[in-house]
Length: 230
Image (cartoon, rainbow, N blue to C red; front, side, top):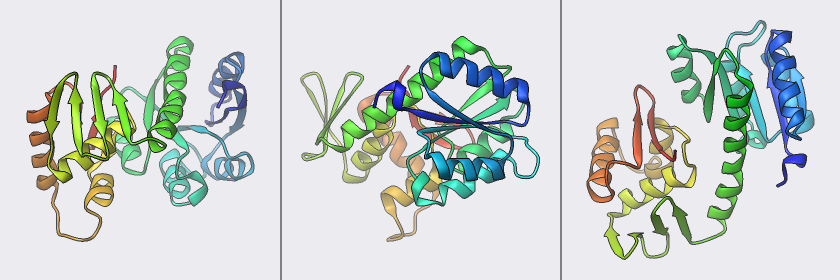
């Protein structure tokens, strides 16, 4: 999808911030809509079906956390990227945001150049993810992940993983830099078939790191894990 066709919804109760973000996004060629609270955001999102929603955390009527939670429960927003605007001191908000389905966060005060770099990178993920879903091999960094053989290759080296280790690896690598909560990992990998604890996930992550190295999977304290691509 070209940038010109990509739609972004920006949600913040401060008009100055809305204007700043909207101005810079439009300069990059994005189609931009705005809303000033969570209720309005949901209504606008239903109308325009955005590719990305940028949400402030603290807003009147309905905050960003609740708006994100409600939209994530709606099938039409299952694959929509959602990013929070947070103050640097709002670590709790970042954790809460990831738990309700946020893909990323951007720290205030807004720096236009850094903002555009982050937004462009987030939307490029969509192209990578669509390509990954349409093929049996996922190439990321110096790894090739072969879904048919349940093998991972680094150059000529063949890395053999247990089934759940491979599924965990593929899940994280399919959405680079996206933070997966433990709850999301449990639902995706183990579903409801067995009783699994957070300790089970941690053990699988440790085994995965032992086999592929320490440079790929990053722990996000209090939230979960991500496949880290610089």
